[in-house]
Amino acid sequence: MTSSKRFCSFCNQARPHASRLIWPVRGRWHLATPSRCFAAGYAGEGGLQENFAALTVIAGALADIVIGLAILWRPVSRYGLWAALIISLTYVVIGTTLVPRLWADPLGPMLKIWPVLILNLVAMAIREDR
Image 1: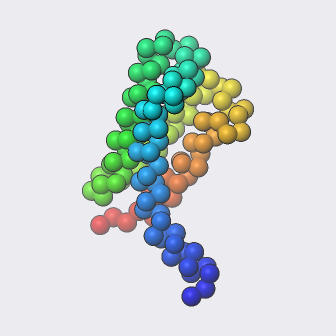
Image 2: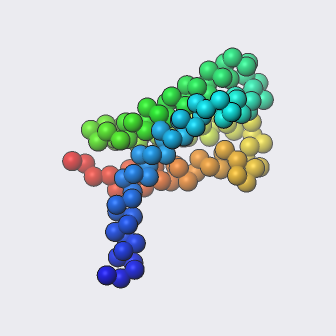
Image 3: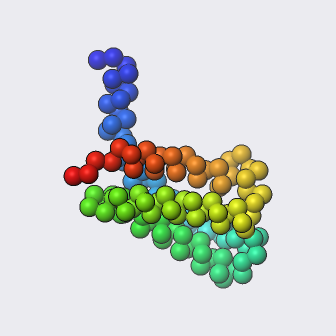
């Protein structure tokens, strides 16, 4: 077996798990207290009140977890992938509107969305309807 065939075999085995794991892990990460406070600080910097900023971060984290669970469950995975695409673009629009300086940070939250978005599009393209 050539190295390219081994790599393709690995990718075919890993692809279903990559997109499925990103969303619930990201949601759980944002529910952790330090991360939640940090994200709420950004929202507060954008002009949201403290309570509303915290509520927004918690709602986004719960949405990430629900999307991840939907992607895991094959009968509704198509809807989960579409929801992931929509919420990623929503994060870009809201983040750009509230705190545009986040684009300047090379490892900032705005630039981290794009690899997840691309992985999601790949998962949508190669998803097998059964």
